[in-house]
Length: 459
Ligand SMILES: [Fe+2]
Image (cartoon, rainbow, N blue to C red; front, side, top):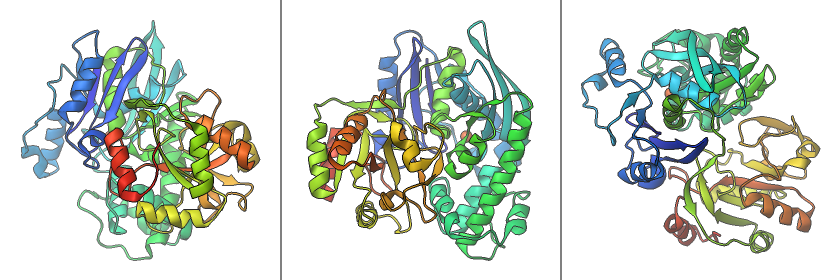
């Protein structure tokens, strides 16, 4: 089965077969256009070559239903012709694609699925019950919040108000909250009841304080939705672009047994579209994209880290999702605070932006106040030893932790083991192998270009 998403932002394609996701990629990784809404033909061709069992091509939303909403909302987009890369045989409801991407990659036999994004056809938030019946997933929508009230649109409009790019830089707005105070909570909350599709004008305050106020409201609204979902099940599968907010995710994780598929936005909807007609559960791994097959020596990488303090890794299958988890990563020494500004200048990012730590999973509790694991950088935790790893901490001494288990498929595990042997530190700074505004490195040509342009060795 093939599923794909395109036409809005972040196109993607996924292929599932025999209980596995055999291939999945974002369109941008191949076209090299950040957030490319068009799915490149090459991505579709690789997915079709991976699909040996049927002719099912499933699209992640219902275009006609979406056009009806756009028409009644007065959006010009309803006039634009639909031009898809492949001809679908199936169409899925947008929020059901998010729900299926979450539930059918989870370990649960039954769950409540919570979906929160900007907008699908009409739904902007929804709750679904999901269960496996005779080996097939069954879904039922039990609650929804319809356009124009949208938590995702509201958060994107605030991101734009702060001078950042909506549908792209929400994570920067999230990071700004750590510097602010919740001084505008009522004002920011009142905006949620308005139609924020055309932006926010009448709001005055310091962007950091608005970001903190938005964080308070987001937590309140999501906790309310999760409390409704918990009346159906304590196992919650959470999807939609709002599930990328790792600060709030951490609070939600304390409320229930939580699973967030590490690509919960619309690109991940491509996987959900494939999983709905497939019906069964699949084994999940984030390493699903283009494969760079080449021998790589962790000793050589650690030697480079010890001499230069920074090194690139482009090896194995590319991550499906917004985070680099070791196969398309820029790794650096977390023990020196100067590493942070050095990596930020290479990546051309704002100076206040934090980096994430990758840590040998068995040492996670020595360094962070956290549960036993957090393998996909989806949650933030307080550091117990901030003086030991200052380059990977935010201003409030929290970090978006990636724990790397012995079972990891990524070369990152071996690199961390060798690094620990040499330094006694089980942590490395791990950030994506790209620069601001560009997609992550995908193939060997991209890796060589990155190396030549930024004078960093990439293995
Ligand atoms: Fe969505």
